[in-house]
Amino acid sequence: MSHSSAQAAGGGEAAGNTKAPLIVVSGPSGVGKSTVVAEVLRKDPRIWLSVSATTRSPRPGEREAVDYFFCDDQRFDALVASNGLLEWARFAGNRYGTPRVAVEEHRDIGRPVLLEIEVQGARQVRQAVGDATLVFLAPPSEEVLKARLTGRGTEDPVAIERRMHAAREELRAASEFDHVLVNTDVSQCAQALLDSVGLSGSAD
Image (cartoon, rainbow, N blue to C red; front, top):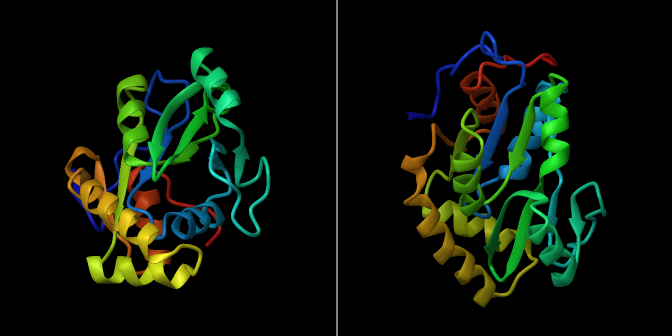
């Protein structure tokens, strides 16, 4: 495992491996995963961001099939039963999962795939996909993390405290990941993430 200015973990596809890289990004709610991932995609548009399925209700501005596939419990149960999810996890009272087929199709045609998922899901991917690279985003401090959650203005104090409790548990799991990056600067963090999986970026 490496920290902060992570060194490249390889040159993309290894010799004899026809599949493109699978990058798993995780970290506590409020750490800035979505912002860092957006910067990663700006720096390297070759990367395909997997769209997760979730039983969570849409937040303002979120779009179906762009931000998430929003589904009810019955539909999610059907996906689980049919092995249609690469991973799935329950977080803060809702379920999230990664549709399997799209990930495999993109990797097979040589396009790197990025999953932005919770720690529970990352553990499942580690078991299911041996060549996946797991990256954990950490906040500069617990105080900064709580300020970011409060600044969203989308949840009440009880929900924020629930997320903080979950965040403390997730931070203890950082050692399970291949790389740990502290998100103090979005652009630098995104570049360190690309470097950690051997993708230098192409937009800058």
